[in-house]
Amino acid sequence: MIIKAKNNRQVIFQRLNVDDYDELVDYFHRFSPETVKRFGPHRFDKQSIIEVYDHSTDYKGYIAKDYEKSEIIAYSIIKTGYLEHDNSRLQSYGLLPDKTTDCIFAPSVADDWQSLGVGNSLFNFILSDLKADGIKRIILWGGVQSDNVKAINYYIKNGFRIVGEFQYNGPNYDMILELG
Image (tube, rainbow, N blue to C red):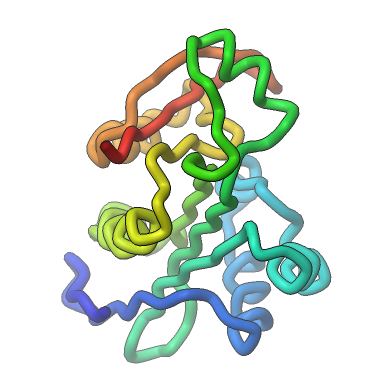
């Protein structure tokens, strides 16, 4: 799928594959310190990427590339199910986590590509895959820091709702999206 971003650059969306691993590491190294602080489903080195994607079928990666430069400008990771250590917290909100119809989601967009529609378009690309896989609910991976207003607005714009608050290096919100 190809779209035109608000900066008039063409962006292509695709599933992450083994040929993208080195480029994904380069993408991580372009993160600002603020982005590094906020994005953390796995470490930012190639070995960690290999361990996540080559040793489990529970994970899917999605990327957006600048069509002209052919460099990754956005990345999202999906894990089917939920994190076990979040189970009791999720249940305290009245949710019953399900390993087959829930997934957790962690998106990122390169700093200079934020607010250009790339994150929303990549998310819509991912949604079609998740619905085809029978996913009924998306849980935000690790929540969102309560002072990350830009991210909270992004999630709300895409249909997520806040279901609770927890403390981890400061206040965070758990957010979910019901797919119907």
